[in-house]
Length: 380
Image (cartoon, rainbow, N blue to C red):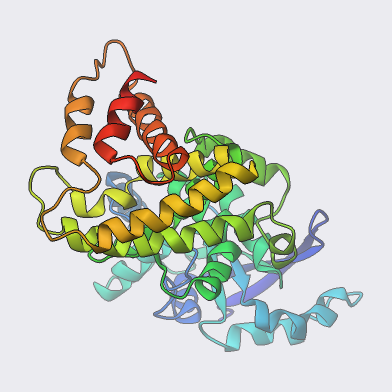
């Protein structure tokens, strides 16, 4: 019996990526993708969704599934390019791909694969001749694969904005790990919660960077994603060389981490403000802090004041005892409680107030207390 067969070829002329179409029975497919098919770092985690229960029954009934899109692992692509370029394509050599399990990433069809895997482990025998249509992409550039993954996101449960931001700035994450060794970043897929200082969701580092560049804490993630997709690529290594303001941002981010370490210590058992120890990891705070720096840092006189303020803030926190309130969060909480949701968008007015507080602190070289800065921020 023919368990898999190559039925056609195509090419994405935008990226010059070769594509191969294959029919394969489900049992062979599950053996081919292996047990670690969900460990592709840029993929979503396994989802739980009521639509998948219906899909599970459809598969048991023998439904023809939409095509599953696979990408040969980039390090294996080069070997097969000559066979794809040949006229006609060298099918015998290309069939060798199916002899190597766990040689592909799943770009589209991860949840369907989970369901089929579950059925197989439950002992279900798939219907005879129940086959899948597979689309194989031969692409060495991870950026093109990420772009394709986002474009393909048309399943029953949309990919979150957070995940898309993480994918589009994936190379930036790798560079940050090298440039700031103490920074611990985690992605949506990892389902982690912050349980120590210097830990931040990666998308928060990205929006902080955008706030720094735009000199505003108001970040439209949808527009950010759209703008990157319009360029047809993610941030690549070449882009990082000329990435606007990256070195300046990471210099301030390094100082922010040192401040966060002391803040976490001081506020770890602080009960008068919910989430006080993680305040500096809050998205509103991250964006507002870096927006304030972005506004002032272009002017040499203010740049010096920012540097002095950050030194003074680090010293203030280092000298603070556990249970102290150096950020005057109780004062901010009182201001926050006075926000009228009928009059303001609470997120917007919160970010504006926090940014104004940091602006006052930076302009004053860190000599004004945060209690005073909150008071000034409230009226500005």
